[in-house]
Length: 143
Image 1 (tube, helix red, strand yellow):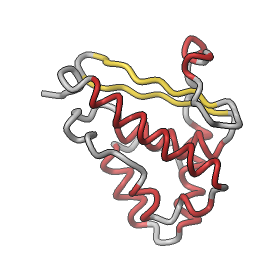
Image 2: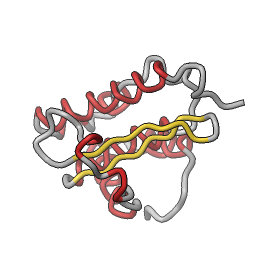
Image 3: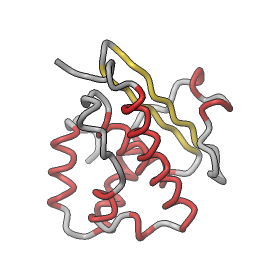
């Protein structure tokens, strides 16, 4: 089910076709279970997401002139939703990320299934992605 490699655009289209928020959520969780963990070199205190009760690491980097984002968490829900946000934003231009937020997950009804603290963490991750891209506006671009 989740072993198929989808582009971010294909992933969004697939999730749009799933009408039930619970099915979307389950799909993202299953996808997260098959995702490679964040390499140990990134799983350091400096990359921990503040305000999160479980260990969650986030990193943003420039790679070959494009933004790259990675995430891992001890909570599968955060790994699923935060990982989706990172996957969707990786390799996008900084202009595409200027207004990046969790509206898509909210529109799909996925965030309503989370406890307040987890929901706030997902929104914080979307903000981190957007802020990183803004800070790298001259470098996060694809030709």
